[in-house]
Image (cartoon, rainbow, N blue to C red; front, side, top):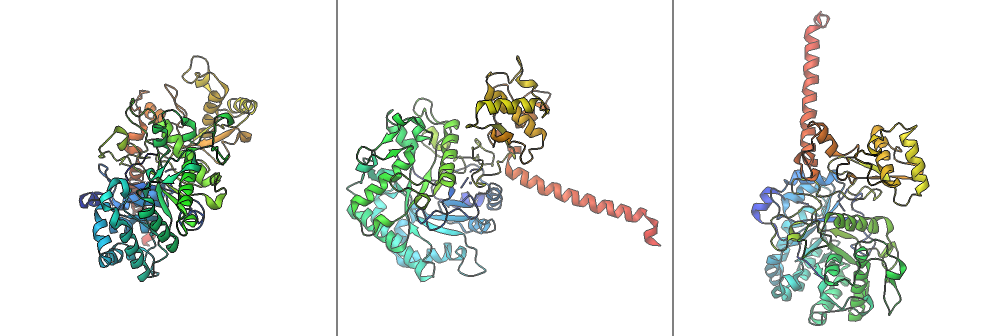
Length: 544
C-alpha cells in the first residue's frame, strides 16, 4: 500500500565520483541474469537484481563498481540514469542494466520525438549490442520513477515520452528493448484481499489503461515498486510480521482471500495478485497479458525505534534472503498465477546505503552495503545459484541446518567434537559459547570449528545433512565463532576486540581486497624477476 521514491537521478558531480550499482551474495544474479519467464521482463528464468542509487558519500568509481558487482556475482542492476561511463564499465562485467530517465527529463522527451531520438542515440545505442563491436548492456528503459505520486505534474507527458522512446528504439532496430515506467503500488486501491483491488479512478481510464495497451503492443512489462514493509507499517497490526518476511505461518493465521479462497503465505504475492486483479478489472486492451516486473522491493536495516519499529538488520536480512529464495529457488508464482512461468523477477532496493538521502531515518538505510563496499549485513543466500555468492569479507560459516532432526544434529556434534577433532572448548560450561545451552547452538559452533579446521573444504559442512553453509556470522555477545572476522581482530590485538561492527571495516571491503590483490600480485612478480636475475648473475656457468 505504501510506496517510496527511487534512488533519484545522477548529477554530474556524482557521476565524476561514481558512475554505480549492487546482493547479495544481490540479483540475474546468475549467469546473465536469470530473467524471468515471460512474466517479469522478457523471457528466460526468474532473476533477482539490485538497484543502484547515487546519494552516497564517496561512491565507487565505475571500474571499481564493475569489479564489485562481478565479485558479488550480480548480473542485473537498475540504474536511475544512463551514464555512459558507468555503462562502459559494466559492459566488461557482463552486467545487464535497466537504465532510467530521470523525472526532470520527462518534459523534454515527452514534448519532442526528436529529443527522444537523440537521447536513444546517445544513451542507448552505444550499449545495446547493435553489432558485434557494441556491448549489450541495456536490458530495458525505465521512464521516470513513481511519477503519479513523485511528480504528478509530469503525468501528461509520461506516456508520450514512453511512446517516443519506443519509436526511436524501433527506428534503431532495437525494438527488443522494452520501455516502461515504474509505478508506485499506491496506484492500486483496496488491495487486501487481492480479489477486490482496483486502480485509482483518477488514473485508470486516463493513464493506466492506455499505458497497458501500449505495453501489450510493445511486449514490455508493467514495472512496479512493491514494498511489503510499507504494507506492514500501514496495516496497524493486521498483517503479521512473519507474513511480510516470507516466513511460514500456522494455517490458521495465513491470509485467505474470502472471495477466491486462495491462501497467501506472504504479502509480496498478495500485492502482485492485487495488481493482476486491478488490471483485469480495468479491462484494458491486452492488459491481462502484460508481465509484471518488480523494479524495487526491499527492507530497511535501521530506522527510528518508535516510528519504524520493524526497520532492523534481522528483518532486512530475513526479507531479502527469503525474497531471493522465493524468486530463484521456489519459483512458485502466486496463488492466482502459479508456476515458474509466472514468477516475477525483482530488483532489491538497494545496493548501497544512500547516506545523503533526507527524510525518515530509514531512508538512508535500505542498502545491502555501505558506500565503501563493506556489507551492512550478510544475507542467507546459500544455494541461490551463486547470487551474492561471495560475501565481501570472503567468509562462510557452517551451522546446524534449520530443518535437520535434533537427534541427527546431536550425533553430528558428537562426531565433530570427538573423531572430527574440532576444538569444542568454547561450548563447555562456563565458556563463552555455552549459552544458549541447547543442542543446535552448541552444534553450530562445533560444526563451524570442524568446517574452518578443514579449510572450508567442499563436503566438510555436510554432517549427513545436519549442517548448512551460510555467509551470516553466527557469533553473538562474547561468543565468537572460529570463522569470525571479529575473532581474528581480537587475536591480532591482544585478545581485545576493538570492532563491534565488522561491516564498517574498510579493510573488509571487496574493493580493498581487489586492489591489494593486484598490488600483491605485482609484488610477487617483481620478486620473481629479481630472483631470476640474481640467479643468473651468481651462476657463472651461464656465462661460459
